[in-house]
Figure 1 (cartoon, helix red, strand yellow):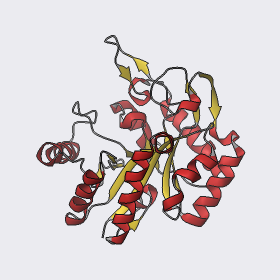
Figure 2 (cartoon, one colour):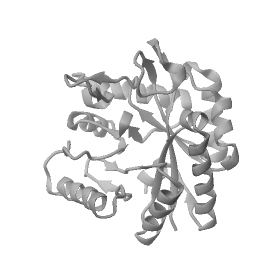
Figure 3 (cartoon, helix red, strand yellow):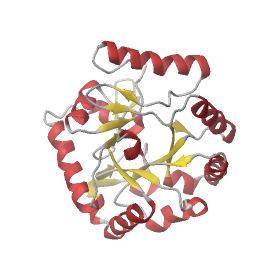
Figure 4 (cartoon, helix red, strand yellow):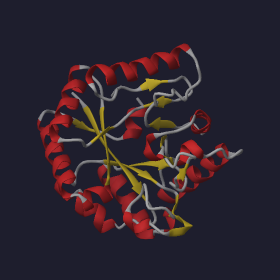
Length: 268
């Protein structure tokens, strides 16, 4: 039996309840784990949903009262989940002109406190506990992951080829597991990796229906959970991606998959 999770990134102040309901209407009973941006800004043309672009002022997601009340209702009725998705989801560019994700460039001296503030504020307004952090582009620095762990949160993302974790036997073992499967089968490692201070769980993207079925077969054979990463606005803007997701979820449920949330997996 595969525990199956949909992780939907980028829910924010500008998100429309109608949009989210519409993209999940064909699988409306499935509990989605939303990675929510606390104080979204987006002055670039990269990395976020279209309706946020050009916004220069941090906008707190909790001020979208309709979204908050809807999420609280869905959490109680359908088991929807809330994760923390960065702070404002901004990108910068390095000297080569390549974009750098927020939790890679952030070096705030009190990043522990910044994460704690937004975590606490969202927990209060959404009336829930938050035990999972999702970094924009799935990438986080060694400093960033330490600040996440200090806030007693786990992480859904990837260990990049440059490692970005403390050099311990446990961490090196996790790194080998992750990259061995990537090179051997071209699949992201689906199991929970325990780092002592926190746990980590990767997510696969919607590359194709066949890819998701192959990922599911691997997880079933190896008794691992499966997390699918998407974005509500991409499902809205690209109907073909939505069709793949809906088709696969129906397939997986028919195969006996058990719908789950990220928080529940980390709490086991």
